[in-house]
Amino acid sequence: MFYEQRMAVPDSPAELRAEYDSDLEAVVETHGPDTVAAETGIDRTVVDVLAAEDSPDLSLEDAAEIQSLAEGAPDPETIVTMACEHLLLGMSTAVLDVDAVESELEIDLGAKEIQQKIERRAPMSLEEFVHVQYVIADNAP
Image (cartoon, rainbow, N blue to C red; front, top):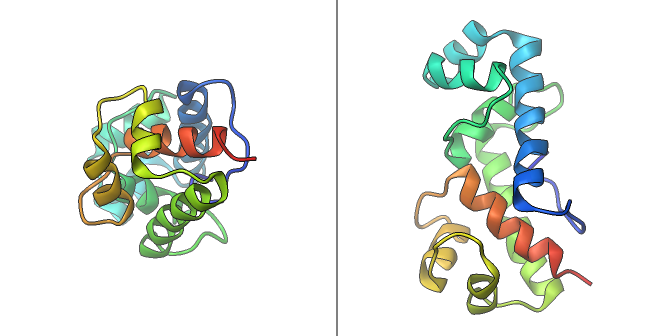
């Protein structure tokens, strides 16, 4: 689950994203696309993309809405809070600041944007989250 603390990551951000897409797809498979769309308010076409084992554009909040439907998962707000807090904790553990994270990102985000997203002062896509999480966990001791 993307909201858990990561101390290790696969070989690339794409592989990490595929892992999370698989988790979300399992939720869709368990509950059905109609139920997931109805209970989360996420557009059915996005849910169908997940069901087809593809990688849709999702916000971190949308991913949390879907993940919250899994048995034993926390509510969406708690998932987002945990995910972002684990990024901050990971940065402390890896002794990284936002400038160091920015320098290793494969996507175009500035240090200020990274800080705003981690602190939840700006929206974050699941893709951005994955890339930031990858850099942090890849630098963990």
